Structures are given as structure tokens and as C-alpha cells.
Image 1 (spheres, rainbow, N blue to C red):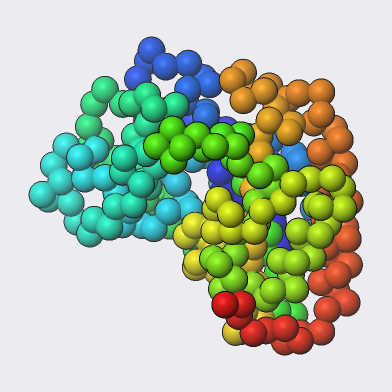
Image 2 (cartoon, helix red, strand yellow):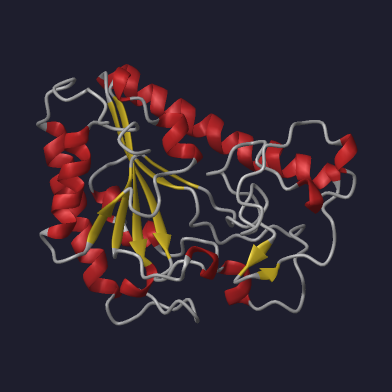
Length: 272
């Protein structure tokens, strides 16, 4: 199964971001083109889920309570809890920043914040839960590739260092069996990519929520560095797009074959 939680480009009318921001500013958090890069999944008959809405509007790879209360107009009367994560980076459930620029010149009302959760976040996870459980009931095991992209360099607050071309996140070995991680890393390495494992991103809410190798439910997060296939500033495909897409098609085919020939529970232990 493939998951595309951050590749949506349908912008809701009630987003209400700052009017002086460019499309690149607003779209920067999104993992643009990931569904195209891994389009081979359709040919392979893989189950797929994609969020059509943009990541900055509501990030389904965050916890439901990962909310920056300073974004709300009346936080004292919020119906839920506050368990904020990346507030400084502006990367909570509702993003507040992009390229270090504020996305809003206003506060979100409690009604619109609640509506984003009710109409986008909850349905996404209800759907994904249903799909995952359906596959597990039918096959006795589930394998999920969670598809993401990342900028070439870390944020300045993290030192601004260059990231690996591919980073595979597994919650430090807890979301899938070790052989699955090793196989995915090998497939990218064999095609000349520099690969890290839990080097920069270990996975977010989706790997945490759906990765349970103890019940043969495995998920790994694949992060591709954006400069490999696009111009990060303009958000346009670059001359290398077709090659990366072709490489990822081969990788999906070979990974699917590996999974199909894999004995369930053969490596169900969790890496430490």
C-alpha cells in the first residue's frame, strides 16, 4: 500500500492565508509530485491513499492535538488538548510558517480549526485505518510505503547541513521489520542514491500509528530529496524528473516482488 499524505494541491476556499505570499511560499511544505514519482503503484495494483488538500492547511502526519495555541483566536475555549510539537518551525497540525514566513496575518477561529480536523484529518485517518485493516484481514499482513519529499538542506536552526538524497524512516526500527528497511535501502543504493536510515526523519504520526510489526503490519517512510527531480524555488519539474520516476518504478516493482516472496513473521522482531 502507498500513502501520500502531503501531495495534495486542491486549496480549500477557506484557507485564508496571507494574500501577499506567492504560490511557492504556500506550496513549499507540500511533497509535490510524490504521487507522480511513485505512479507505478497504480500499474502494480497497489492500494493507495492520497490527501488532496495541502499539508499547510492540515497536516495528517501530525497528532490531532499537535496544535500551536497561539494560532487560535480563543485558545482558552478550545474543545481539545494542546500537545504542540514543532512550534518554532511552524510545522504543527495547522502550519503557521513556510520558508520562515508567516502563513497568516490573522488567527484561526475555533470553528474553522475544528472543521479542518472534522472534515479533513479525521476522514483521512478513518479511511486509511479501514484500508489497512481490510488488507490485514484479507492477507494476514500489511506493507505500507509512506511517500514524502524533503528539502536539500536542513533548516538554519538545525545547522543547514545537506541531507542524504534518500532517507528511510522507521521510528528507529519500530515501525517495520529490519529486512524491509534493508531491502528498500539496497534498492536505492543499487541505483546510485545516497541513502540514510533514520538519519534525518524517523517518521511522523502515520508511521507511529500504523507501524506494528508485532502483528505483521509494517510501514516505512521514504523521503526523496526534492532537488533530485524538481526546482525547489519554482516548484517545477527538472530535467532529472523522468529518471527518478523510472528508478522509483523499478524500486516499487522489485520491492513488491520481495514482499510477495517474504515469509510472514520471518523477521518480525523489532530492531534496537
